[in-house]
Image (cartoon, rainbow, N blue to C red; front, side, top):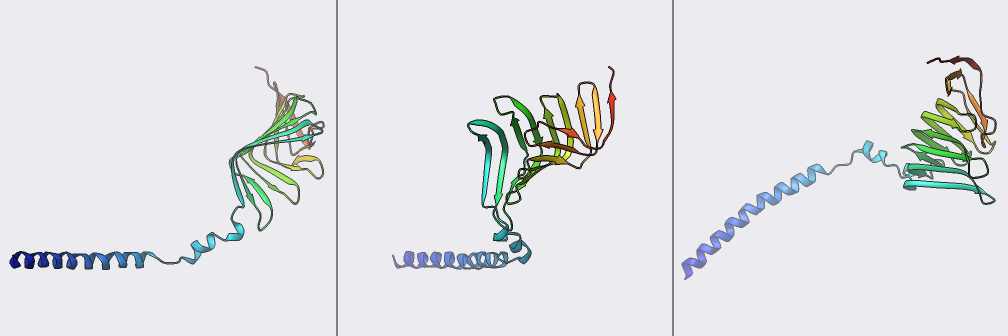
Amino acid sequence: MSFNNHSHIKKGRRRASNTLPCFVLVCLVAFCSCRNDIEKARFFDPKELPQQSLDSVRVVRSLNGKKQMLMTAPQVIIYDKPEKKTVYPQGIRMQIFDGGKRCAASIKADYAYSLDEKKIVEARRNVVVIDYRSGDTSYLNSLVWNSAEHRIFSDDTVKSVNGKRITYGDGFESDDEFTTPHIVRQRGTMTIDE
């Protein structure tokens, strides 16, 4: 009986002797893998982290119960610092209404941001403006809406299509209700015969 107890002790020691190198190895791996990379730590500056991140956003702006604008975006990121801004990294769609139920114009872009304190929204990349009253569809690289001045404008090259007519210009302007849209510095108009 004592022989069996002695062999049991030897097996126990053997297990202990195997776990010590494993424990040392785990500690070395954990110790060596933990390090502070200053550049990576600076990447996460708390002053530049978003305050909110929203998905599938829909905003309706109305005045006296009448819808003026409908804005939809797949993602909205709101920053509070270093300045208040809202970013639409996956694009934005806006519909502007004529004071009733009829949509007067729409704006679509692949990216947009707004500087909240300056009351400016800038749409960028593949901006498409459709004026439903005139039938014009305008293509731009960027478009700015200054809500304090009630003005929508761009200094980019504009291509406007209306049926078989194509018009080129070096800018775009309108009031924010889309009652006076026009191409600035118009360079020419082509009519396409099919």
